[in-house]
Every structure is written in structure tokens, then in C-alpha cells.
Image (cartoon, rainbow, N blue to C red):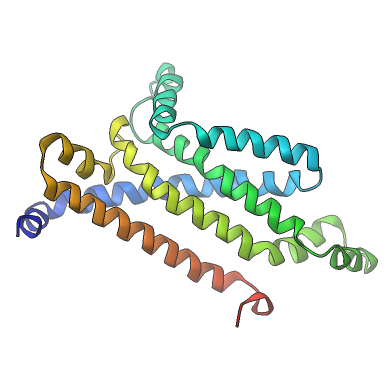
Length: 217
């Protein structure tokens, strides 16, 4: 009953922090895609560059989440942006790059070379091959990387609490510090629900933009 009472009494706060959490994901995701997908396409042309890029992205991803948030605070402090939404969004973008770059690379490289050669034989330009063949055929794999990045981001965004960016981390960390377990459970439930729902919506989007011939029957 304590949990239900807490939710009913603090409905406005719960709604506010949920929207803040969604805001962090919504701000970081477009930048992650706009940066990650082009990089994945570019490095698909050179295996050596691809290996170096993936190693760098992998190193960035291995930095502990809280440490990365702290680094962002220090770097952005001189321009008075070290606290709030900005460091959280940049940290989320950095963490999202690895799965998006990797899956874009895998998607592009997995296309049968004979399809590309046939397109060239038909007189298609590199841009036409990219837009009409490579990207459409790679969408399921690229979207899988985006889903991984988003679901991971939903969890990492909880650490935004420590840089005052808001979000559902408030209920977990403030709840733990106050021994208010109804707060912790509220945060855990909402974060889990948000992760499941974002994954579900992205699967629906993937279905919508994937060519019918590529869908699993």
C-alpha cells in the first residue's frame, strides 16, 4: 500500500521526472544516429580505419558511466554547461555510438557483393547504390544497433541525477539515500517500463521502414 500511496501522492513529480528522462533520450538519440550511421558507412570502405574507429568507440564505451558524467562536468564547466541536461546528453551520445557504428558497419558489409556489382553494371552512382541498395538492405541490422543504444541509454540516463539533469534516477538514488524503498521501486518500475516501451516502438518503426522482402515471415 505504501507504494500505491506514494504514486498517488507524488503523481506530478513522477510525471515530471519521467518526461525529463524521455527528454534526455529524445535529445541524444538523433545526434547518435546522425553521427554513428555516417561514420559506420564511411569506415565500411576501409577495414583498417574501421578497426581503429571501433577500438576508439569501444574504449569510450568502457569508461564507467559515472566517470564519464564527471568528465563531462569538468570539460563543460568553463562554458557554464557542466550541470544540467547538456553533460547528460553528451554522455548518452558517446555511449550510444558503439552499437550504432558497429551495426551500421556490419549491415553495409553483409550485403552480397554481387548485388553491388549488378547495380554498378546498371550505371548506378555510388550515392544511388548507398541510398537505394545499401541502406535499405541494412535497415534491420542498423535498427537493431539503435534499439540496443536506446535501451542502454534509458538505464544510463538514471545517472543524470548526479549532474542535476533530472530523470527517473531521482527516485532510485534519492530513495536509497532516504531509505524510502517505495521511491526506489517506483523508479525501477518506470525505467523498466520505459526501456520495454522504447524497444517495442522502435521494433514497430523498423517494421514500418523495412522493405517487405526483408521481413521475416
